Image 1 (cartoon, helix red, strand yellow):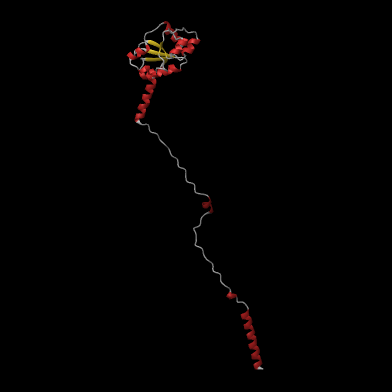
Image 2 (cartoon, helix red, strand yellow):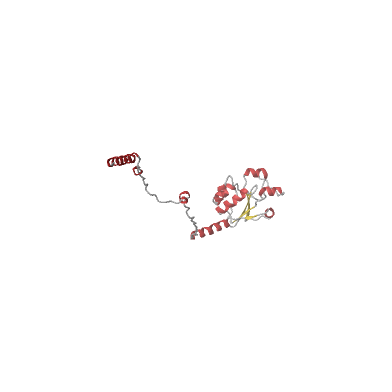
Length: 205
């Protein structure tokens, strides 16, 4: 009996061992290796999406006037005041034609052909600014030789007129630059106003 039990026990043990070897072992599963990536510094989502705004800088500019600027300003004011001329109305010119003054010279700065066509204000002299702009800078002898009348001096007042007041204004400016006459005047209405209001006319010979 004993040998039979021993054989039965031995066979049972061998069967269990075979079954245990045939069954997969839980401990024999392959182990997966996890690769760790290098760590990166953490960034806030807001910082990556929106760039940082730099604070606005405010600049102020200060202008400092130089000493020579004030002197140049005063010189420009004095020069502009010296170029100012007296403005005459038609009634003033009429008085001048009826009561001539040798030191108040009325000058027509239109071209000689215009005077031949329309005539001129009585007693006026002709000095064409368009064809002879250098006349204001000529010496007294050369001036009289070219135009047939004496060049105005510092004791004289020159009063300019033209057709509509444009050339007379330019003549006044040239006279101021050249020292042509002591005082300068203008008749802005010029020939258009004079003729339109029935002023006397002197014809060129």
